[in-house]
Length: 493
Image 1 (cartoon, rainbow, N blue to C red):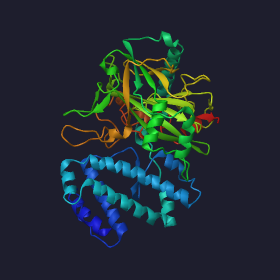
Image 2 (spheres, rainbow, N blue to C red):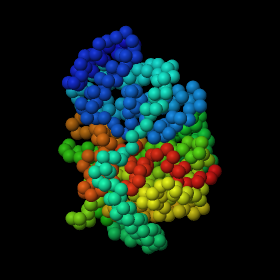
Image 3 (cartoon, helix red, strand yellow):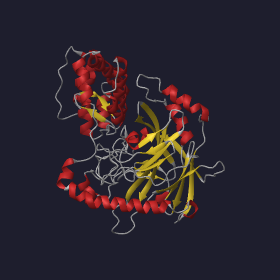
Image 4 (cartoon, rainbow, N blue to C red):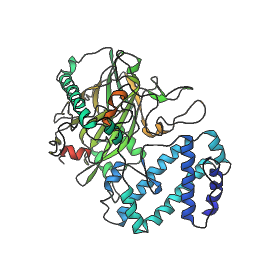
């Protein structure tokens, strides 16, 4: 293996001005660690780091998400431990493949002088396997890994300290409650009486193969045949499931900013939305309920902007996105739905009768944001997809309705894997992620950041990458918390 790594190390040395030529050693593990260090240096220097999953200190070949972090103390045997650790290598491979694809031409040319990027990816894959075998063979290293496998939250203690959070959270909490009262009033209006500023445009997914209703439970069970029983559908199966639960959007289209589209990079400036190409981006996610890991399907619709409504509007700005999530029971029926915008704002829950809200814990401050339910769904809740009524301008979710069989779409959207946003074409020939190294979309910042910073969220209002969504200004909460649903709902089979 050293003969394979050595030329890559020599080439990668040229990628970072701050790097020194590594001394090749006979030990393959040391050579692999050096290789990862060199690649990391090149990625950092180019500013193309992917922030969707967290790096694990002391384990440069692994990355972490909140589900796997929560599972780290529930690994009953060696088989479960290995499978868990292998999932960390999968996250690293996904992130590094995007980082390598986004390296600028000079860096890629240096790589190509030794071997091409696919060959580098293969070498990194081999190194992950070698390093994983070595670490799992050492109990002390496995123990260290389990201790280090923590995803940092997206709240800044320094900002909360400087912003006198214990005091400033009081008026913020009052503002949150007032906003929730206004939303409850809106949801009290009959659906057919909701205001329309423009014209309702209905977007539905393009037709394609999807499972029969009785087949969904079998697909989920088959995808869960692993030591930790995590539903991990392959890409074709995930697409079929995504089609089965794909929402239909009734968008109040008042301006061009109310059209669903596809992010793209122009020759200059921040990313924009091509509204001539309607796409909704899907991904799989997971949550833990009791001893089970449940599959979630996540859909994101991007809009060109949330237009400002006056000079004092703090919330408007470039780009906007509405995220819709479906949490599935093992039998394939939705347990509940929830939604945020891509800033992490407006986290609203829409439970079915199988998800009964829990009371706020006694130890939690009454000021903290706990659970906002603008609408509970009736027993005849959507078995698969739902109809989402979306407001003009703000793109607030105004109502969740059952999807009637005779509903006619005026536009079709393409279901597209969310992973494509980690490496989008650019006119200069170098792909770029929609997200920066901080996990945020450049140019999408809002004026609210100048007022809301004492709540501890960095750049509040900006669009964020999956895994980087704090969803409470008062308190702490993340959209991808492993126990988010279990802590707030009692779920029945």
